[in-house]
Length: 254
Image 1 (cartoon, rainbow, N blue to C red):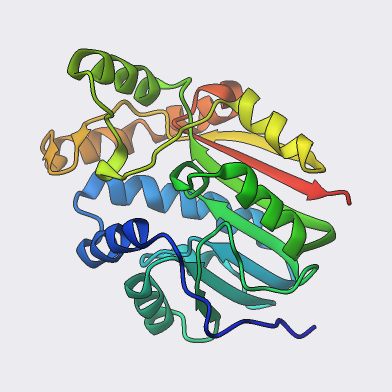
Image 2: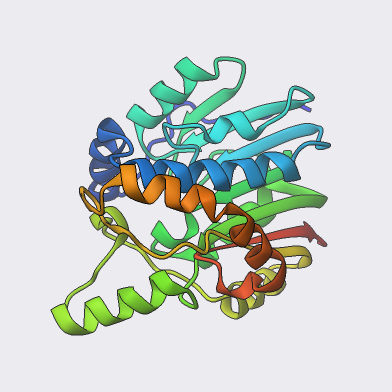
């Protein structure tokens, strides 16, 4: 299947684009954030282990996102940041890439067998438009995997307290848009756009250890969290709705 791309397409939201150019230029700034992202990518990689065909990652970023795609798949990375695309292309040159806003994808309808949107939907101004675009480019029966931070978690509780005390937004990485969800609100949105839920799970049950560069010492926290890893796995099975990250795997029914 040929995937058509408009090479002249550029994101219209310059403010967002400028922010993420700088964001991806800096990279991950603390070991615990890297540990959490590794856990998330490991879960996605496991879910894609038997996948084949055309796979698109919306918001492929500049780290290890493209590594989740197995060798049987044709990978396609999309990001609003040119810096992120350049870094991902250097690490994973076998995949194809384009710079694009997630709500205006320059791709032909019914082009993909699987679409992944991990830790991206909360940073988009119009999440419903993003879901509409995913529905458009995904073939009937295709798989959509989405993750986002969860309000019903330790992180959500502490963020609410911080915003109430400080009387201003308290976003991850000081990102301009950071609209978290609950398992119930995200499930409703997915069903609205014709997605049948196949799997729901939570990831990362450890408590927050700081924000940005202001963290508890990683040489203390990292081995402590590793020693509690069995508890993390138990919570994923028993308390999926309380994970800091919530994950849905769904099949599209057009």
